[in-house]
Image (tube, rainbow, N blue to C red; front, side, top):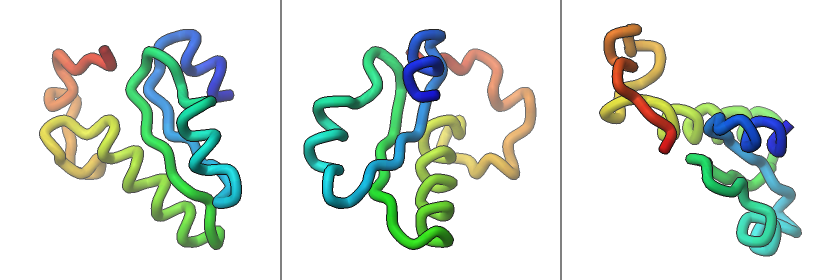
Length: 79
């Protein structure tokens, strides 16, 4: 899924295993798209990390996604 998202220019959040994070987050990081990487942990903790990373990646002006309106996204670019 990460490769497909990257191929079409979609920002992506990637979760890597703790044992391979250092290597994979450098060697296999999404190329030429905005992205965030997180370390997989306990399921509940990992979901929270993914949501925070997603908000940081796509939220205009640091606004939380739940408070963003369609007008907030106008002019947003993943370049």
